[in-house]
Length: 527
Ligand code: TNX
Image (cartoon, rainbow, N blue to C red; front, side, top):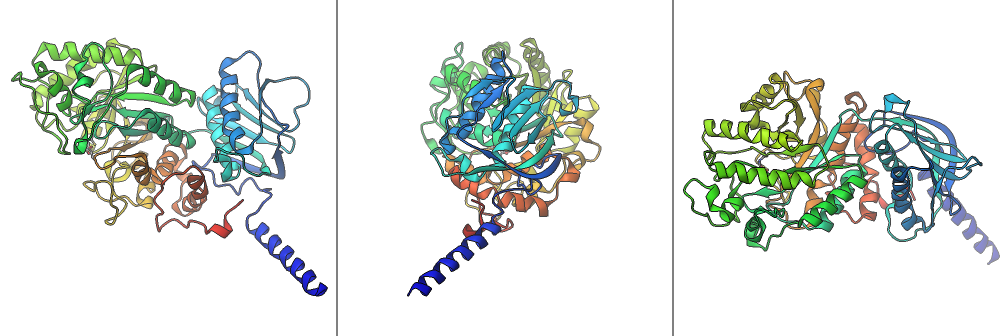
């Protein structure tokens, strides 16, 4: 009887040891990480750091901005660890067991968003030349901790990190995702969740598609009917909605805290039915069209020869620019199929100086390259190579959003229920395997400001549906924007992506379990 009991114990110990070795815990090799986007360099020193309840986050004295970033980090860690890490000014005394944030402005290689994360047995140091770099480095630190760090409620530790040094900085300055809140409206909490999702992968731009045929989603005080009437519905006829200026400012603040720039888009002269329905003087015949709840494009246009149109645009750009600290204003300009070519060019040439007069740099979809571009204008390539080439010939920079690769609203394959397929289907590998600098003949890395993945929401009505199309592809677009092309191989990426699954689950993200990704089985996942 006793022998049997003893045998059982021995067996249990052997089993536990075997499981432990599969999960490589405690972690000792920093090069065995699953960080997305892949960092520039990782050097392991083969030890382990343990984060305990005695730790604090230290920041240089006298900087509110760094204290704020320290709080952001403590906030990410405290919920799941159950610790009560506080933010303290860096003392001269020993800092054993703590996390230390600092600025190293002489480390110019790191640029605006790079960071160096040095994990020692006794101390974690995160340094950057600019504050934004610290926030990017915090995302790396997050991904090095067990997935359950993403939980909101206390989880059991230990909270261990392999020791070593990561030096990292982005390939492209602009790394974004777009959210269309015009076809279907999404409230402030949904947008914040979207912002958190993109922040996790070190993206730095939320392009906010605020207006379209189906709805006008931002309060403009000088033209109140835009939201009173123009926001009252959406695709399918639901109630729609809009952001008050206070809500918009709150989103700007939330994004800014994560060093994410909001780029507001007012799409024009096409995609304007909601505005035309609200103010008939913006149409040529002076008649208000009905609100539109279908998903066709190309049927609406501002009356480009009327002065009131430019007064209207001036007011809209002014009110929106005043609430938008970022440098960009997106004027849309796509699919204006009901605007005569000459009128379209006249219109874009008139609108650009208005935007510039409010201190903003213009972005437009690639069609705007047919006009005479303002100095410093940025053209967002989505469809036509010739337009992107015209942009570069005029000295503009290009954002790469090729629909056949980077559109988050394209289906994964023919069985995907949500999404569209006019630009083809985009499986996870197809969305990952392309390089912005060699996508269009004649457009090289030096012409490119960055990469953006747009999400159009004709078929999406809630956050679960958004996430089904966004995850896991968003991680790939983030890596394309951040990591050098020679650092990106699908076979390596798909393994790192598989290891993100547990994070998606802890965060309650409704991801698409692509058959091309070797998602790890439950019993093999790291603790
Ligand atoms: C094209 S891409 C559009 C949008 C649609 C999208 C659907 C672009 C600049 N215009 O109006 O929502 O396709 O995928």
